[in-house]
Length: 249
Image (cartoon, rainbow, N blue to C red; front, side):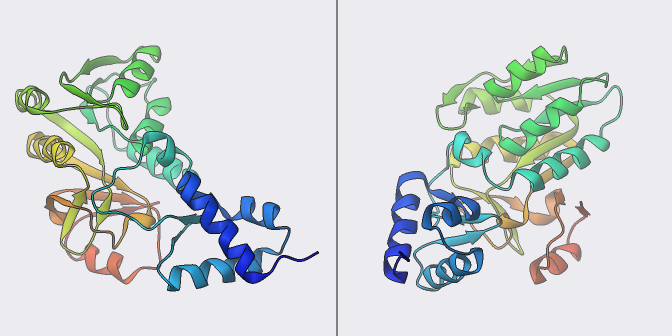
């Protein structure tokens, strides 16, 4: 027995309310209908402002001040993030001192770093554990730990970073528009801003779902860092290429 269109949409919204993100394949299986039908339902719901389409599925409408947990981020756009992480590690040279921001894309870089002679500085407890397991020389930034992201933040963390210089820094970002790099949290923004100031070569790692997003806090102008991103048919990407270095994967 087929499910009515209104019922399908309610199932989708209920799942989004529960887990904030749903995969297309998951909806096809649950609703027992075709992928094209689910796509049309998602398009209708996005047009009415009830969700936002992202690669591979949909997410609840974004709140400019809401930061997703690391668990929520880790399941989204994973193939794009892996490709971006691989490209980022290709830029690292033996002897570099690098900063790895807390985040799911920067975490994926770690598995590619074991063969390099590096010093890695991070404000992520999660990253630090994985780096030590890979026998990479690791410095962890001290401060107040934000539960949702395992990131060390606050005045003491910023003061610690100000004492250090980095050959390269790799940062995540929640939003990239034609002018600014943005994130929802003021204290995480302060960390990212300080790292940008102290890095010879700063890089921001973003998948295409971050293009056109504008979160609560401005971190810096887009030209302050090179962007490493997956290729996207985006007019914004063409605008950004006129302002800063874009490394596409």
